[in-house]
Image (cartoon, rainbow, N blue to C red; front, side, top):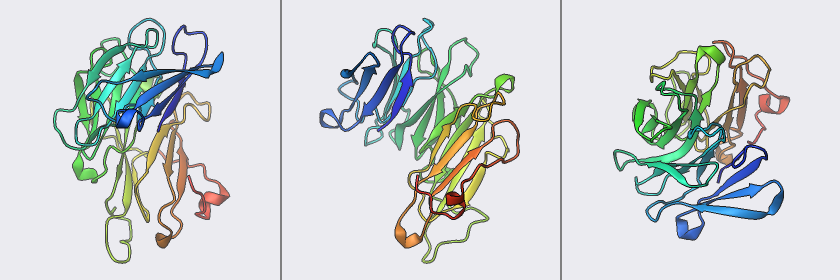
Amino acid sequence: SDVCSSDLVGGRKARLAFGSPGAAGGHGRVGVVDDEDLASVQWIEGGDDQWAFGFALDARHDCTGDSIRDLVVGAPGHDGSGSVTVIDGSTRKVVWTARPTTRVGLFGHDVAMSPDVDEDGVPDVLVGHLGVGGVVLSGADGTRITEIGGSGLGPRVGSSVTVLHRGRRGPLLVLAAEGRHWKDATPLEGGGEAGVGIHVFDPSGRPVETAYSFGRHVGTAAGLRVQSAGDFDGDGHDDLAVCQPNGYLAYGPTGFFALRSGATDRSEEHTSELQSRQYLVC
């Protein structure tokens, strides 16, 4: 369901990790492919009480201090019993596993590694808790550092999360929310909720009012994704990619893609002719 690339094991060769959350009767597992032997897959499985292991992945930072990036795995489960696990990039062993404090929503629906938030010298982990919000976990041991957002932002808040690196200005925590009307949205014919929002927070969990934070009316909200695009324009700051897949045809064309600059607090969207004509499906 998710895929990422990193220098897992050895720090010399790239590795590709991919999730297979429906494998093993729904328990799921993660495959790691060595670029020297693409036909060989090493499988990593979660615990017996973990479900949909591998639904979300990230491998951007080293939590164990051995200069080799580690792998964070989201296993949102199906009944509020989700989990997030950090796997040592060198040994492929479990470093820690964290679980939600309440059996509500889907904990681990998305994950994103973050620069050090609690200033203990170890990178941390931002978790999307679908239906609840987001939470930052300590990369050292999985303890909770701070929570962001909340169910009031929409019934599918926490569907997607990402972290934007901004050099000395510090990281921004980005949380996607789906399923509500926005003040500038026109309600759909027949009623119902139809909106998406991007909400931005500083490392302390305080909302940040920037051009990243926005809402828009769409025909169907399910599937909104946010992702750091890295430093796309070469200005030293991560940029934000937002993808809203095309929805039900009955609602008309709703596909949307935007790339927003990470350098300033004003919107600098890069759009294609297809997107402006609303035909883009992503």
